[in-house]
Amino acid sequence: MADRAVPVVEKRLMEVKLGEIGTWVGGRDFTPNGMFSSVRKGYERYLNKYIYVKKGGIGGLTMVLASYVVLSYVWSFDHIKHDRMRKYH
Image (cartoon, rainbow, N blue to C red):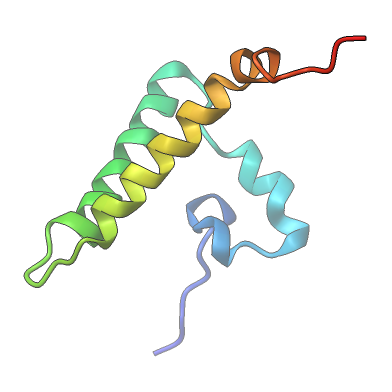
């Protein structure tokens, strides 16, 4: 059986060649509903890969905690930056 050609729009990002990126991005849904559904699909993929497994470890929860720490630091960086000790003269 020969493999049928898959349209560029239906491919995953890792399967798209460099010359096809413009066509692939043009086929994405950038409406608020499309963005919400893509975030939901990514969240479901994360849950299925790291949380809903038979023999799960602490890896999935550690990723969530680490991303929360980094995101909190990025959000409060301006406040932290102004609280540094400065040399007054």
